[in-house]
Image: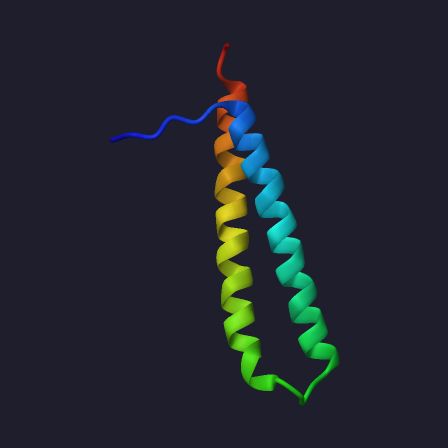
Length: 71
């Protein structure tokens, strides 16, 4: 089954992903400030942040493509 998504739904998704990515970026910053405490959590948080930004960039690209199409 192919999922269809509206431009408005995609805008909400981009906004949510942007917020979540920003939170993970802050989590990484906090970990760096508190080093060497919790040094073993850096890779996990970095991987989650990386994946969230991959998802965000893909959603932004999809939104840009959808906005180019005639309505």
